[in-house]
Image (tube, rainbow, N blue to C red; front, side, top):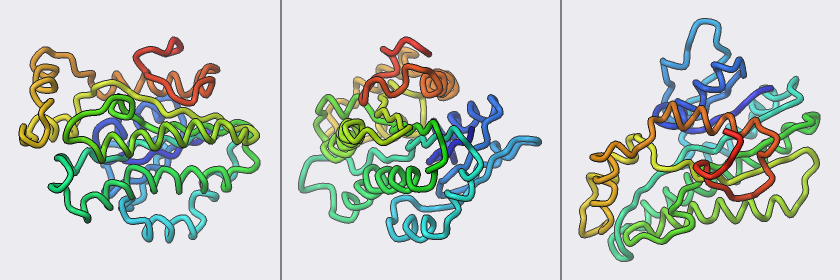
Length: 244
């Protein structure tokens, strides 16, 4: 078994990669920066410095064949599309076209490009699994988060449509992991309240100790990803699934 994880430089992505390595599963990590904590003695973690918000850079890397070479000898393969951004925060007219384009590239284009390349690169695998890290924001609208909500909803619908494709040996799920204590939450709590009116709610979650540590979430997420139930539903919430 081998796994590809995006956004491994910190937060949930780093925790997911660590949880996989703890199970002896080799990991290929894609992120803007290498994570020294994943370079453990004896751990099979290959890290590629790659800006996933730049489609041209991702296309160039995919064309090089590194993904196919990494997956070549595995009969079970995993793709965890974790990298994403909550920016830009604010209503229409305050976001800026460059920031919108960057968010769409990172949150939608990169996962879809990787998913397609992943299936192409793993024809011999008997068990192929794709997990999109989604969000409750994909299913509930928030003022100031129209770009984030839309991009996460796109991942949900992508998973639904891929399930309809019935690709042999492929399971897919767009999974909301819950509210996790990561740098993204720091960004949320420091947002201008005029741009993000729900800020107080997220401040209260931190204040009340309701945020889940990344390692705890990652252990449950990996458990679900490897379970027999994974892929039964194209869209799911980690807080509601049983096999974790």
